[in-house]
Image (tube, rainbow, N blue to C red; front, side):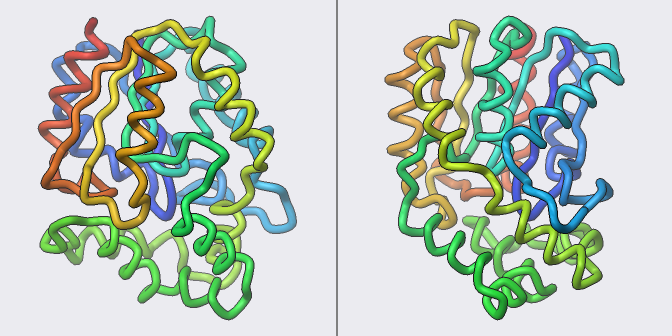
Length: 252
C-alpha cells in the first residue's frame, strides 16, 4: 500500500526527503505534500485553517493520485491533521506512524504560549520572521549542527512575504479544540498496526514522552521507539534510521 508522510509547522514536505531515501526498499509508492499555508501550497488569508479544510485537502490529494487505502506517518502539526482524518476514515488506513506531535486536547504550557504568540501581532511577526524561523528550527534540534544553511534556506523560502508569514501563523493555530477532543475519543478504536518513533530531547513539545505513553495506552498494538539523541525535528537528525524503521513497518 502507498505511504503518505505528513509534515508540520513551520516546515514542508522537504522534511521527509532523506527519510524517503530509507523508505525506498519498502517498494511501494511514497508521497508527501505541502499542506495549505506551507511550502509551495497556496497560503490564503481570511480562511480558517481548521480540521475540515485539512480533511478536504487530504481527501482531494489522495483522490487525485487514485489512492484509496494508505499508510500514514505524521509529525508535529501534521499529527492532529492526519489523526483527525484517520479516525473519521479508519477503513482507509492500513498503518499509522506517529512521530513527535500533538495528539490530545490537554495542551502543554509550551503549546499554549505558542498559540498566544501567534495570536499577538508583534509576537507573531517575530515568530514568522527569518530569524524567528531559524530560532524555531534550532529549538527543535538536539544537535544544532544539523541546522545547515541549506535547511535554513529551505525553511525560509516559502515565507518571503508578509502575507505568507501571516498565513503560516494562521495555519499554525487554526485547528479547533473540538477536533482534538474527537481524536482523543476515537483514537482507541483504531485497530491497524501503529509505529511510534520520537525524539526524547524535544524542547518544542517537552511533554512528548507523556503523550506517547498515552498513545501506547490507547493503542496497545503500538510499537514504540524513543530516540535519546534526537529532538523535535528528528527527521533532520536521524533520517536514515527513521526511514529504515518506517520501511520495515509499512512493509508489514
